[in-house]
Length: 233
Image 1 (cartoon, rainbow, N blue to C red):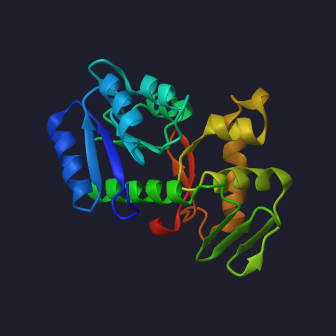
Image 2: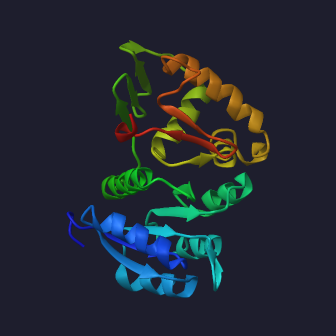
């Protein structure tokens, strides 16, 4: 698919929602292929080679989480989940299975398109993991271990830096508490959620102009954290 017309696969059994998403994406110049179940979705993912998958979880022939797990065995395309499941446990399980983002129904078309554009941008630029991050007011260089906020270099503790490192390497994606604990503190600490809260608060005090209204280090309530992309300023 050309750079100007990315191919998006929409796997959704609710025909009106599928049509709504398809129309929204096509209005932005994207090419859309559709499937109504897990089996057809997996076939389409293999044969059509989409740049992005938009996936419902409650499908008639299986659970979308199982489809995410199956895809992640051989494919690393971005996966944006659209689901009516509001429970935090469902979001966490989906993200831990390998999804990149999660949007709860009902959703705003503007937010859907913004997340789609962000996912496509990350995929097209992700020949290697990000090693730097720059948004107005904040600069991070992982290789030089240098952080600048509001024009001043900021000194971080080793744990604070590892936490920021993890978020930069997954910029724009929701990173669950469990993922952060595993990557920063190790697999023996995956249940110690208070570690993340404490160190995230410290990071915000050092990097955010107003830590109570963060601009960069965003909370996904009950799920984890996300480092904002430039587009979301």
